Length: 100
Image 1 (cartoon, rainbow, N blue to C red):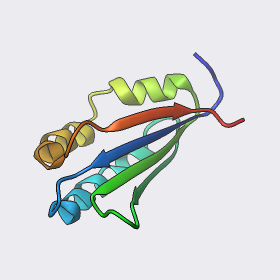
Image 2 (cartoon, helix red, strand yellow):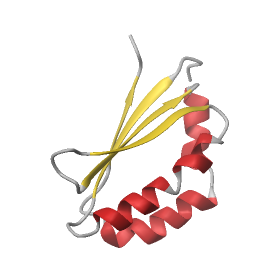
Image 3 (spheres, rainbow, N blue to C red):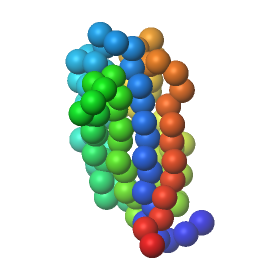
Image 4 (cartoon, helix red, strand yellow):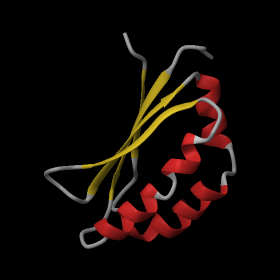
């Protein structure tokens, strides 16, 4: 594990017609996630060319902080998965990055 910041780009595509509800649900996890230890940024973006495409730009203080986020049973993320599940059009894409 590394103690240098890690960036995550998580992309989610929702079914047409679900954009407004998906945006509302995705926004609902921003504030509680920002309170998690090691979270530097947790910014939600929506595509300017395809409103069904959403992306989280996340920055974490370390691999350990990201791992804790990924494995914690946080109620806000569990609720999101349950409510968003039927709206998603395919598997999300999650990539990890380090600033150079």
